[in-house]
Length: 298
View (cartoon, rainbow, N blue to C red):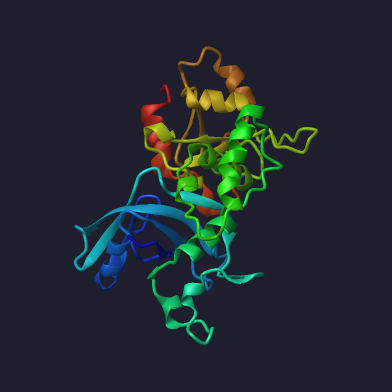
């Protein structure tokens, strides 16, 4: 098994869905096969406007021929492993290159940097993970003391030597929930998408919560497009199907609600959920459709 870099563009011509699959041509088959059972990092090229650089990690489960395109293959991502970085990592940042495997013997960037799929050393993998997941949760909602102690224990791998593999950290539910919450709250500027309220407590923490649209225990990934920022009461109603969202983010109120008028009084004047500033971070229609089909009480 080998860790790797998968290059992905937001305007890609390939049939990519980073949390589910990565499409690639035959020329990369050997390299992708080497990654089966191991972790890869997604990278968006620097020539892309507003590039995210190294922006997520995921684990490759299988590789299969693409049934819809000849000489094309699909790397299938292991469910529940995709994780957005709260801190996108630039290719060449303040500390220089983080992916040092692209350097040649003279210390110059080699042609390897142009490969859409390339192997990644454990040192480079850990360096990117450390930067991408570096924690700054001072604005997040509070957590209880017991959970805080557990979280400090989960953070401990980042204090160890660079050679230590970070994969156990990536699989921690506690860590993933914390990072997902930070990612979603930042995307929505700490504002409830339904009420429009941005509540910051006296300690400078945002009181908004991050809701999974399709829950993790029902196959939902920890990806920002499967998340929405909601106040505590609205989050409770969303999880219980009293409110839902159309694909255009129109807010739906269940006919089965005991007091639908009170629910409507909480909704912002537009009647639509307030989206993130970045279009690519909007709730994905597939997750919204799942919520309407399996959770929303029509």
